Image 1 (cartoon, helix red, strand yellow):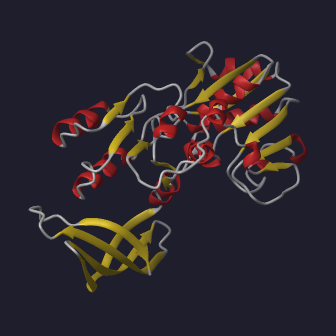
Image 2 (spheres, helix red, strand yellow):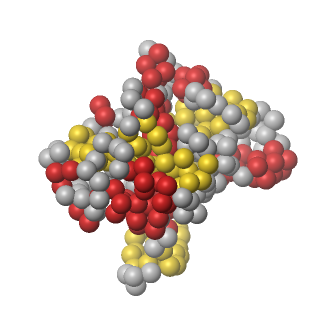
Image 3 (cartoon, rainbow, N blue to C red):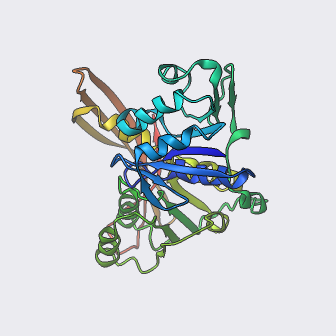
Length: 337
């Protein structure tokens, strides 16, 4: 028997759990999955129930191989999962880690180096006993059937998906952005709503924004079908971006996890100054284009009393039909200077 240990909950997301299920489906031998959540509970996926720490620990000694799939930062915050690693260390099992970090420093606290096999699908640097690179990315097998031969130059269909819970509510932020700049009338938008996304937020979006053109998908077993039908995907910096790349679909990726972890360290943030200057106005037939340079000085103060100041300069290009009755300008391009 092989035991797979992973994390999954509304706050930490379900990317690790999804990958663990794909791994389990690939394994011919019998296997089990234990899920640790932020409530310090252990869930036996097969039995679909919470089990005790003692029961979970007892099963460790029956396993010759234990696969661990979680981010190290999540282990540090989960006391029960950290204790469980100490129990694993007492066994003679071979340990396989799917890990996003660069070295063994964290795991040296629990295991001897020779016991560990580290699989890093997102790494590009060789290390001893490490299998690295995208050839070790665990992908949905259905993706191979849906690789597109050409990329559509004209964007018509946009897919928005931010995982099972979207704890940072980027779905609402992106939709409000598209509404503000009048993009909703230009595209056919499909939004995948994860099973743990706040239903009240969905109701509020549908009611207040009147998003009649948006297609809402609440339950989906194979997202690859939607990816294949899309001209552009807006998603998180998780496993989904690799699935989108495998299908050869253009995408906009927002690195939510890194932003969230950094935000926890931030004490205060302020924009010290903000300047805007029109640097060019261009008229092409009935279309007006305005190029604006934004310059801002931003200061961030962290809980460790360090601070960081940075000056950011961006070029924004807006356009508007001269005969349009709307006073709204459409943002068409943003670039850093």
